[in-house]
Length: 145
Image (cartoon, rainbow, N blue to C red; front, top):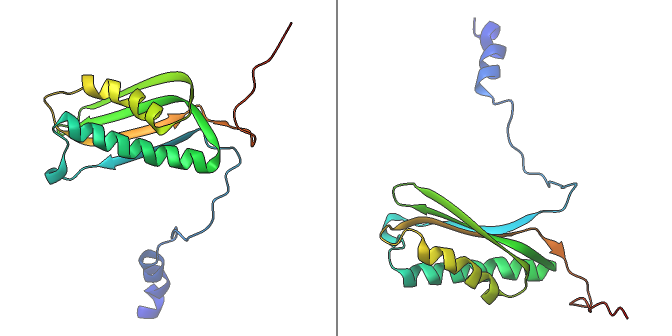
């Protein structure tokens, strides 16, 4: 009896779709770079100073990644989830986000206005509308006479 049901038992016991590590190759370039952090109960952000510091740290990490890959973004979305799971997203668009201070100031403005009395459970900052910058740096102005 065991022989008869062995194949059937192995079929159910062994998962068919086992995830195996493999390199994923994307056909199109990425359109967004970002970072999110979920805070534990003991470290939830309640004061505006804590919120500003966390947003600045995440802005630096996103900017460092963009700088290392040679990308610039035009839109900076901010994602905030409160401790009661209310989700609020805001975004700002500019010509080009070039420095971490520029990214942090864009994201801190809506952060100051949102959810003043609530504690923050999740904070996410990203840059979208990516454009790859040239090797020689900034683009020179076009002189037309």
